[in-house]
Length: 429
Image (cartoon, rainbow, N blue to C red; front, side, top):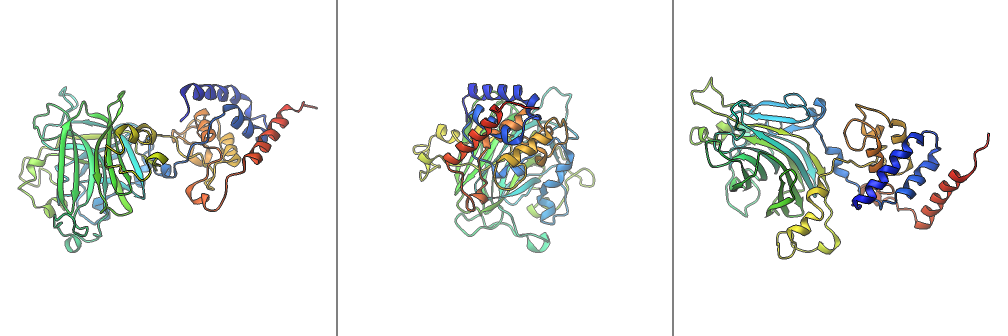
């Protein structure tokens, strides 16, 4: 990342130059921006294609639901939408449901392979907007982020089985890690809490701590066998919350958002299978269900973290080897960037062709796609997208690295000089 002063000066230069870029030949514009802003190229983020800022209801179809994929005949969300109930958010409002051991609640997810982080800003409230208190009343009413091992379930009546709960056995049952915020184990709606739950073969270990509010940035990270949970109160620093060894998890995981509420009406009234396959409502059932949770997620941002060279080979689980501060040097804010790769033409590198896409789309105010030069998924094409391109200029995607090499410095210098020479030539009629 650049110092703020350099970023500011770069943005100011770009803004001054924007009004005239359409008059310049592309071969002049590309080197001029690269030379004058003087930003060292940053590594691209191949997972940015999974990002969702929840500003377009059409992206709801990009998300999968566990109950649908596994064939459960029960949609346990009373509300699930994007940019509808709450503008600019994905909203989940669950019926009475829970994530615990073999009890499986609702989850909206995308599949991710390899190392990754997912970050969101969640807004937790109860269902009554007029009671003056946003803390849900029932115990274990929370929403947050989860990573989960996919299960080979198509017909639950035939394919589902409870986990053996024996640590160290081959993977079976439920296997996941989540971090959520809401009402934990103190009923009555008096204060917010975090719940982190580490589940292996349906053996769930949970930890509950106080949370400062129901508005919180949450981040889950998987690097090799290590799973990390982090959170950030708005305006405060990121906090590394928990570290787990999950060598049992496969390369590809389900990664996304979960909600659950009203645990005390579930156990011991329902077996896990009955809970998983039933929408618990009054009527038709004769139990006084009291679901009391609405979760609004402001975005879902995926990132492929790169461990800095001095930390490679160290034990990320051990704070004595890798401190929280060292983790935050490449996670936290670094992994919570709305800016996507500026590879607008999706050819594996960031070059002049991508600039031409941005130049053509510049000035679009709404509905712009990545191909039109919209790097930050905000719907328009402006100087922020140009800055993203400039920061990543010269980068290759992971796939392209094996097939191409970065131009030699001397070659790049000649290209830049040629561009400057073109700008310096006097105009003639």
